[in-house]
Amino acid sequence: MSDTLTLTEAQIHALAFDFLRFHGLAADQAQAMAQVLTQAQRDGGLSHGLQRLPGTLDTMSHPAFNRDAVPVITQVTPAVNCADAGFGFSILASMSGLDPLIDSARKLGLAMLAVNNGFHSTALWPVVERIAEQGLVGLSMNPTRDWVAPAGGTRPVLGTNPIAFAWPRPGRAPYVFDFATTAASRADIALHRQQGKPVPEGWGLDAEGRDTTDPAAVLAGAMLPFGGHKGSAIATMIELLSGPFIGDRTSAASARFDQGHDAAPCHGELILALDPALLASPDDIAAAEATLDAITDQGARLPGARRHAIRAQNLRDGIPVDRALYDRIRGMMKS
Ligand code: NDP
Image (tube, rainbow, N blue to C red):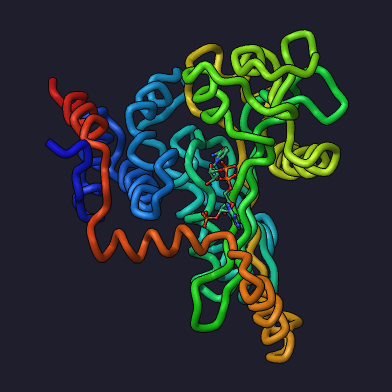
């Protein structure tokens, strides 16, 4: 028997939605979470696809988690909208706040959405890509949990702090990048530990703040940002802008909030939408296209291109799903 099933987008969505509903999540919450997990699975982002589904139960069992949370959207100024996730999953609040954000950006040229009090474990690209599909530039970032020491430091204080950016392209898929600001993901370090392999130098520190290549010591000590002091500064900017700036938790406060429940981190998310029509002339847009073409013309690839190619292939041939994972999810839906 093959280790992989091939499913349609609708079948994956139904599996995720039914799982979340079975475990008591309100329909709107389940729809938003099922949607983003399906998009990740469809695009080959397996770390943020169906694999995340069993872990949603840890998040939903956090005492503060609200299975029935209905996001509350408020306009603070014409350019600033807030979406209070009400201690449900962040993704419903982000998606609910996108139309007001896009409206504001179209009217004013630029606008922000502050998402507060949401449990967040999803990939960031679905939100910025949706903004770019509307012809706007999207930028999103959030803190996570204090697993990361600053460059030159010894103790964790920053989160893995992902950032995603999308630039709309006339007649083409948007330019999109989306990554954490650490040298490597926590999952990758855990995989090295599982395989008994050392991690490269520069990935982390042990509990005493010393450089180490022992993955177990890094997981017990501190991860490091990518790119030395440069990544450290970008991770710090994300910490400030999507934490204190929007009146929400830092990565350290998010970790304290967890109280050992192993839930997804609960924190804020900053989403910006910028309208290229504000200042850019058609010649400027052409210059942007020429820049992106100058990257690909020399054999380099654009971020997002691999994912978009996998999407096209999976929509044509079906979306692979690990059979053991599928069986596990089904097995968790038996009363
Ligand atoms: P990676 O280090 O794998 O980087 C992924 C990004 O880099 C993608 O945009 C990818 O494009 C692009 N890329 C990769 N290789 C190349 C290349 N050779 N040339 C050009 N572009 C390239 O990502 P991470 O492991 O740091 O993050 C993975 C996911 O985890 C993200 O979606 C992120 O949002 C999510 N995450 C979420 C967190 C949260 O708090 N919710 C916390 C941390 C991470 P492509 O997709 O086309 O390959």
